[in-house]
Length: 169
Image 1 (tube, rainbow, N blue to C red):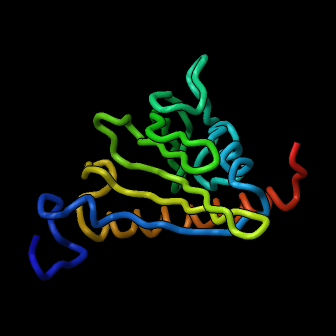
Image 2: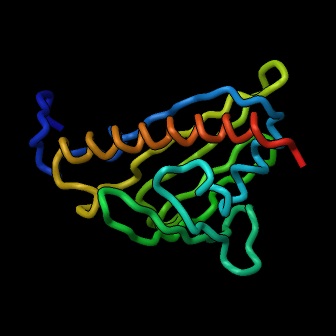
């Protein structure tokens, strides 16, 4: 890649690994409880500003190899994604790849670290490969990463608020 980059860099010279982030939030619950909530993908609509109607395939549960579908929306558009769980360690980590482990496009991961009476939750997003559907310039992909960063921050804050307001059951 060129030492000088701009928002107009051609798609062909970009590196997917340049597009990712991690955000953190403390939540008032034990890591096992937070893992339970996050790995129940059907609940993501409670916290995510972009995802809804997320469900595991029939008979699937949060374990490596399981598939699920979800509806996403952004800028007035809607689409359905298929994702595959690539990490499922109760109380420690949960991750999935949009498009599946073999040829996925984005990896979402969550890790859970005890701190005091609660948990530091880390949510990460990493572009795994370039695809024209996500954008064709550095500017497009920077804007996507920034948008997803804001989405993750909103999700983490909503998760923390939901935990604070909802008794463990």
